[in-house]
Length: 211
Image 1 (cartoon, helix red, strand yellow):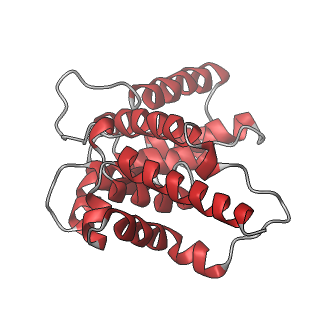
Image 2 (cartoon, rainbow, N blue to C red):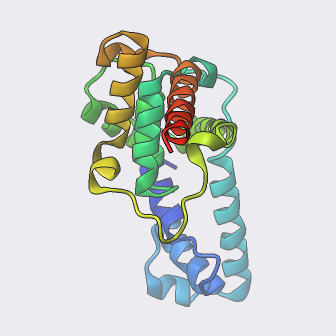
């Protein structure tokens, strides 16, 4: 199963929807069957194919013994990777997978070429690595509550921050570290987030002093 097919199938999954209908759609997609062919399956055949669907989806999440692609180790990612991931996460948990994979894939190809290759790779060559990366990413976010505290429902971000917030953050880091903007994006992610945490705490302290 390719990454492209995995994403299409995963997009069908709806824990709140009709499970039989959902499995029927997955059988159509995975085994290239028509709706009529699935409707005409016996109960035994349907159950058997349902099990194969589960096996196929599960196999896509198991790491291969000899990976083909070389993804950046999480402790080696830079602030640019971090910003890319925050941007791609807006696409949703499933649709963001190939884009995040492109960001952390150690390859100098143009982005569109990388994305095209990722989509045609076997899912097990990509999915488990992106999943592992996102689990570590979530832990990183949780370790910086000063930067990523939950936003109140009535508290809205400005259009500028929504669209250019991370560029603005990188610019502040660059000014604080006395480096270029490009160099700020190349900083190790922990160093960059530590700088942002300091700058935010400093701003809050100065505002308190000025009251």
